[in-house]
Length: 297
Image 1 (spheres, rainbow, N blue to C red):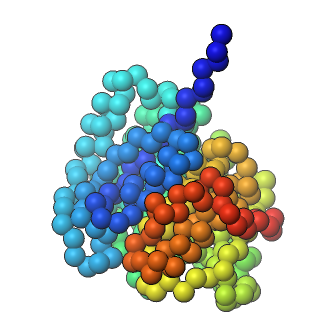
Image 2 (tube, rainbow, N blue to C red; image 1 turned 90 degrees about the horizontal axis):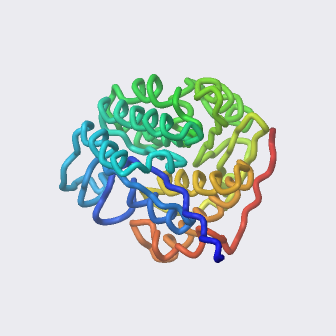
C-alpha cells in the first residue's frame, strides 16, 4: 500500500495586505508557502500600497472581522491542524485584542500551537509610527501570549526601556523581554536590524535569544536607501517557518537571515523600491550563501 504524503503544517497569519508591493501578509505568505506551509491569511487592511509612499487607498477592516473569519475556519473543523499563529502590524486596540483571542482559540484546539508576534511599532528614523496607545496594548495583551517575538532594535528598546549600544545590552534586554512571554513556551526573542557600537559598521546583525543560549548572525550591510518596507515581515515569516521545521533557534536564525540577505541583494541589484519577493523565491528553502549563526551566550 502506498503511503500517503504527510500534509503540510498550517499557519494562521493575521496581518495587513497591499495590492501593490510586499508588506504584511503580502510579504509573509509567499515565503511560508515556499517553505512548504499552508497559510490561512486574515487581512486586517486592504491597501493599494504600503504607507511608506505617503498616500494610499483602501479600507481598514473592523476587528470583529478577525473573529468572524476564525468562526468560519473553525466550522471546517480544522483548527486542531493549525501549528502556529503569526501576527504583524496591528492598527488598533481592537485588532490587538482580536489577534490575542484568535491565538487563544487556536491553542484551545491545539495546545502545541506557537504564537509568533512581530511587535510592529516603529523604527529608527521614523520613531513610533502606530497609534500612541498601541505599544501599551501590545505589551499588555500580545507579549504575555507570545512564544516567539521578533522586534527590531528600536522596538526592543521601546519594549524594555533600555538603550541598546553593545551586544551585552542586546542580550540583557532580550532576556528581560523573555521573562514577560508565555510561560511553558520556548520564549524565543529574535532581534532584527541590530547595529551596535562593538561591531563592524559595514555589517548588520540578527540576534536570537532562548533558554538554551543566544546566537548572532551577521551579514554585510547593503546600501538600501530608503530602507525597504516589508523586510521585517519577511524575516519574521522566514524565521517562524525554519523554527517550526527544525526546532533549533540557531539553525533557523542562520537560514532565515541568509534568505533575507539574498532577497535584499536581489532587490538592491534591481534598484527596486519594493522587495523582490518573487524573484528571490529559490533562496527561501536553500540560500545559495549561508551566513552561519555564532553562539554568543
